[in-house]
Length: 164
Image 1 (cartoon, rainbow, N blue to C red):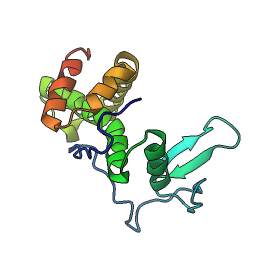
Image 2: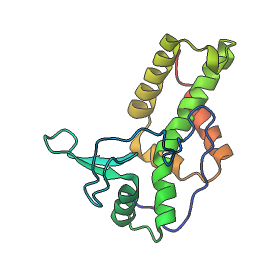
Image 3: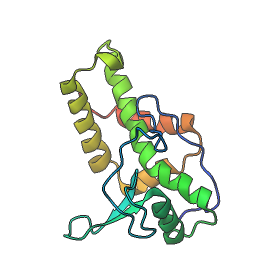
Image 4: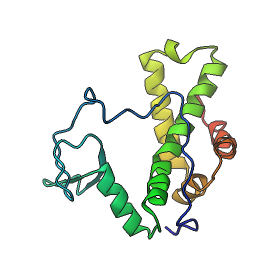
């Protein structure tokens, strides 16, 4: 993967259904995992897993995952690496939210009124479409779109292809 914006800090994508939790809250659940790099005990958020299917998986805290990403993809700053790494996840979440919005509009529903069955169906449609029908190169192109409004326009093209 080559990044043409090695020092560009991407703006955060604003999500309406999937808010980021406050991991510093004492109420936020901790894991039983220890970071393989810095040895932090009870990682609040697992940032990465290596050898996940082996008998000895290696868990990394979010900070170490960002540091490794920075080195692996030759970013010039930690902030740029963190923003690009976060974008990998948030573009998918944004696509999922746009898919939910389309479903809600077509079915004259609110998010709160979605049944568990409908939520499961939408999640599976999102996973199947985004993981299997959007190429890795196209995902990288989407991730590099700076402005959320422009990104949403591109993602809407994909949303229209999903059949409920």
